[in-house]
Image (cartoon, rainbow, N blue to C red):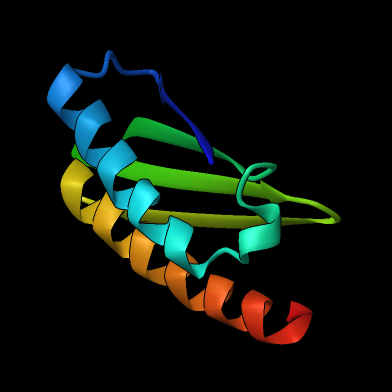
Length: 101
């Protein structure tokens, strides 16, 4: 599985990129073996300011053959947003695997 990590309105440090790649890489076990090589994950980490609060958003777009799964979660912490997105995507991948296999 190919994984791209990018920042929108923010410069990402290496530890954040490594953490995001590690979390998304763990999801590979939920992708059917036949499509693992064709799978591509795009992780976009965003920072926004709303009402004097910093908000971090993690959006993961997982492109599989004939399907695209998108997850977006926002919290006050970048690492928490990555964790919540990973858990949500894991549940969606389980459903995808059940229907396709």
